[in-house]
Amino acid sequence: MLDTLDATVVRRWSGAGLSALRAHQREIDELNVYPVPDGDTGTNLVLTLTSAQRALALDLDNSAEAGRTAHGHALHLLARGALLGARGNSGVIISQVLRGLADSLAEVPEVRGRHLAAALRAATAAAYSAVAEPVEGTVLSVLSAAAEGASRADTDDVGVVAHAASAAATVALARTPEQLPVLARAGVVDAGGRGLCLLLEALVESFSGEPGPPDEQPLPPEPVPRRAAMPRETGSPDFAYEVQYLLDAPDDAVDELTRALRDLGDSLVVVGSGGHPPVWHVHVHVNDVGAAIEAGVVAGRPHQISVTRFADHLPHPPAAPARAAVVMADGPGLAALYTGEGAIVVGASPSPRELLEAIAASGAAEIVLLPNDGDNRAVAVAAAREANGPRVSVVPARSPVQTLAALAVRDDARSFEDDVIAMAEAAGACRWAEVTRASREALTMAGRCRAGDALGLIEGEVALIGAELTDVGTELLDRLLGGGGELVTLLFGADAPAGLEPELRAHLAARWPFVEARGYDGGQPVYPLLIGVE
Image (cartoon, rainbow, N blue to C red; front, side):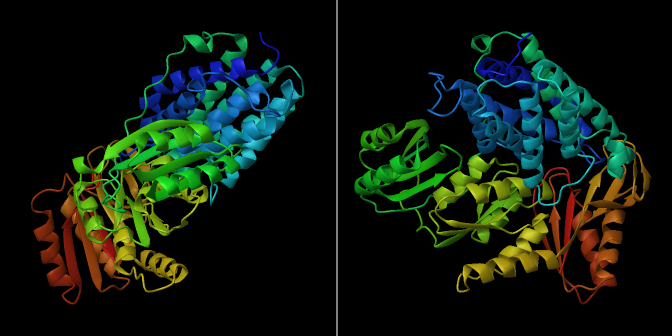
């Protein structure tokens, strides 16, 4: 049994934790099915930890900077990798847990039990600060209990403290349905909390020396990137190549890099992640690719280098805007709608890294991020905080129909602040609802549903249960329009039956003749119908 948390334990923990999450990925995904089959917490945690593990594994020389211990260096790499690859709220929270541990333990020469307990308290504070509206009965409660359990152990035996934290987290996980009624109705525990418990169990195993040393752990595969559906930004046609890479470098070296790249080409964007040292995303158009990469080598350690020759893509790309909107979306129809409104579209569950890449590629000085659902909000906020250069704000749209409402009022003639406010007000004024099928039997706010029942959700809560999608859709329309409204937006999903749109339009024409209705093929999964009322 090891008696301190050193770099070897950190590396062993990273590999064991990722293996555990992969083994339980589907189980965790299924935990947050309530009762709609859109759970992806397990997948998000695996992708987040994969990014963290790659950041650690690619540190080939395993060298720490002056003033930082070897274990502090390893924890910092994990935290930075997790942040840049974080998926969903769960991924952002775990990245902040790692950052809290790194900040607390970086300069501790030998990490004993009480140090670990203090670090878990710091990690808890960091995780709570990452969430705008913390909710008990989630991973936050499990993390808080783990920190309390570690403190109650009151010993310098680091293995005992880790075990106490893991045991307390397991007990807290079992209590999450008591704290969060939505979990009790679904008969499940919190999915993110389950993932955290697996990571804490892996930490206990790492102190015992059970799985193999880090050199025996294979480098995890790079998560498949979701390319942003966006027009390529432009610069002078004199430059034939787009060069992009991530760079580990201090601030003063990046200042010199920026001057060197400015002399080589144009469309230069350098954004940093924060931290000490930060990781930078570098983007530039050049003719001398080697010189652009060599400038990065002089400044620090470039990695994930990509080079694109413009002649292989769009020969005459449109000009980069002064202001841009980046939207997270799932469904070809939705992507087309947002692109038609002039927005840049990325995947449904992007990481902060992917959002930073979209921000950089836009070439815009002012960016609005629209998360499109509640789960993406934390990722969007994290990306906005890490962006270095352009001004970035988040409009907290929770539904694709709210995003459409926000994009409809965009006006580049306004100041950026006024435009963001107008978009947020438009999104907030759009009431929204969803129609889907239940994936399992569960007790909802509208009563008990069975697998296959049609569900009507208003603002995310189940309000109606029925047999047919059309019946539930018409009743949702009546409820929403009963509170007033002049414009109805209908977004039809990939699984929408052929007769759904004409039946809803006929109902609106008969019952609400003075309401304007607009219908679009969104192509979104899970939800055959999305409704917005303005």
